[in-house]
Length: 69
Image 1: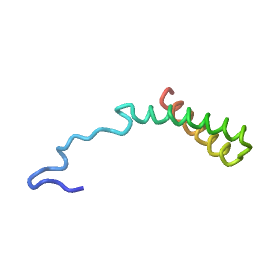
Image 2: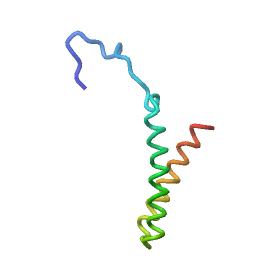
Image 3: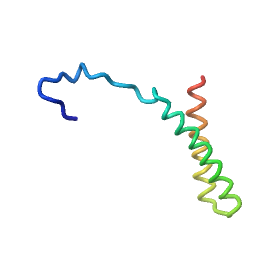
């Protein structure tokens, strides 16, 4: 990352990841999309879609569960 001349990188305010709610939105969206992929995988008899959809649901639930613990 480049800094301007005379700018101290220690004084630049930083925002931690997940502070603005974007990661929570992404986890909820992943939960909904994963559920849709699982349903499409079951109806279309596509095991890869069922596998990736269920993995997305598990990862989203794990993240959301860690937030509420």
